[in-house]
Image (tube, rainbow, N blue to C red):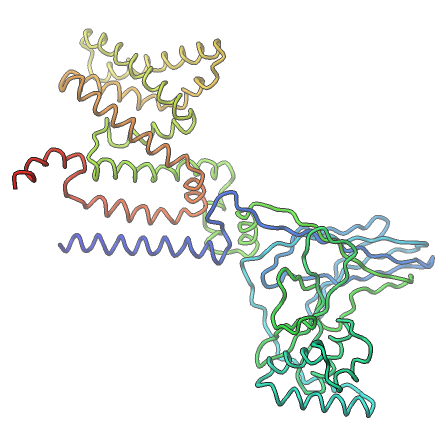
Length: 510
């Protein structure tokens, strides 16, 4: 009983470890559990337009950074006729700079990038902001602003609810007398955001503007959308001035924060920047892998993905072998099916993956049948075991060569895949079946041969499944779960399924 308990404990720990690692890769690193799963990738293009004055030109454009939930890749800058540099600012932000000695007339510059959902969120160091400088209002606006802030303070409980109620007071109709006076006739979201920031500063709450893009497919000549951020205890919280709701809107990409200018142009006039957005799809596994590699996730850095591509392709097949061993354990230990050799069905199943099932079965039966016929004739020569096996190997190779040539001449290309059958295993199978025929008779040969093909077929159906192939390669830690199952099955000593019929009379006589 103690030994069984040890098996249960070890199996539980192995399964727990394997499942934990797999779930971490799925939820934290973004690896998909289903094959062919795709992720939306957004291509964002900014177009800078201006009229050059015929003088030296310097154009500076604020660039976005990777942010929570979004990764930026494949940045491209159009620099035809311009010098280009990417500048890192003291505050950690980035700017693109185009320069030219002389330019005249209408100028176009492009910056393009791709963004996709990022599973790894790098927590940046958050520095508490200093107290804001109160805005300068005239006496009338100052009185209205103070009165409005008093109203908001009375119906709020903390900084977050204060900001929410303030935005509602500036957006939800009908506006109060104080809010309407502060806004005047202007109901533009950008002006509402600017007014909200001024009022927050007057209330002594640190704040800043956030400008970004709503990622929607097939959008052209878009402008940045204004949000506001409010400092609440130890973190920045985003609010949408258009809806007065806290939190960043769905599919929103932050382009810049604070009062940093979006575009600066020296040597030109009538400058503007517009944005176009296009959505495409890429395999979720490729996105997750690229994201994990960029962030140097330890579980990926020391994994199969760090191997050369040739070795990775080899492991795609190797990692399917434990699936076959699990199938063999179930059929032999729980069901009680007899096979010719313990793991010969796994090798046959691997061959079936290359040949397809029906052709594989046909080729196996032809080679083994012909090999048995020749083996019986070799038995009359009284050869030693080594000589006999060597002869059978030679005969098997000859049979496979002949079948391949004949099939090529007949145009049956599928039969050419017979070369994927393991020749040595086929030779040993023929030898064992011939000995079994002599000792136990043809019935036992049919039982073990049929059992081997049945197990090989079941293993093939499981190993060739797209979901199984995806999970075994992308989540190799699930091998621990398979090992736990095999250990549990391996300690089973009860009746096999095929033995129930044999013991049925004992139950009926009770």
